[in-house]
Image 1: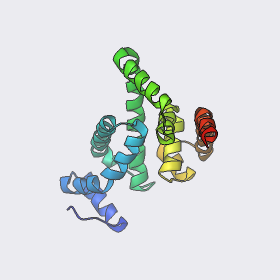
Image 2: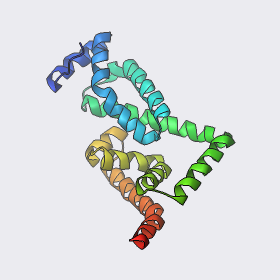
Image 3: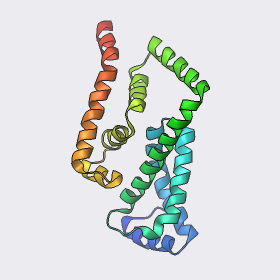
Image 4: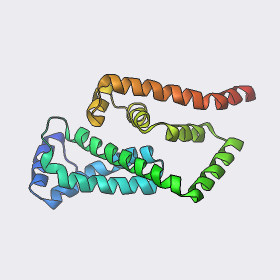
Amino acid sequence: MNRKYSGKDETYIIDRCKNGDIEAFKTIYNKHRSKMYNIALRLHGNREDAEDSIQEAFVQLFRKIKTFRKKSTFSTWFYRIVVNTCLNSIRKEKKRKKLDSLDDNVQKQIEYTSKRNPSLKVVLENEIKKLPSGYKAVFILYEIEGFTHKEISKILKISEGTSKSQLHFAKLCLRKGLKPYLENFRDEL
């Protein structure tokens, strides 16, 4: 079953997945993979880690599908799995990076190169990567993916107020990080 399905079909397909139907799982995979990959890519900032997280998220989906109780939409429930998988992976990666001096040298070279001739897009992407994981997740989901604070609160299991607060602080951090580049940009005009 590789055709696209409507929201009306979703309940039927999810029920089939709960009963172990691999074809139904493939249908869910085909429908959601691209969107979930894009979120993982934005959270990680690189394809390899995004691919790893998506693979792990689909494994978790397969294992946890029987726990889906339809209290939220399926995509909101699955977004939560993807975001949590990415955030866990990012935390583990930070611990690994502390031990890997080669990666530090590569990062210093990238920073040196981008400081010498940065495009605003590259600078913005670098500043987003520097955000604390909670701020980054809310910023990406709200500003890039277009979710509402209510939807984000369900995905991340935080209050709407926390979502708004984290977005506010993410923007403050980005303004602070981008300020020198924006001043240089104005000076060049």
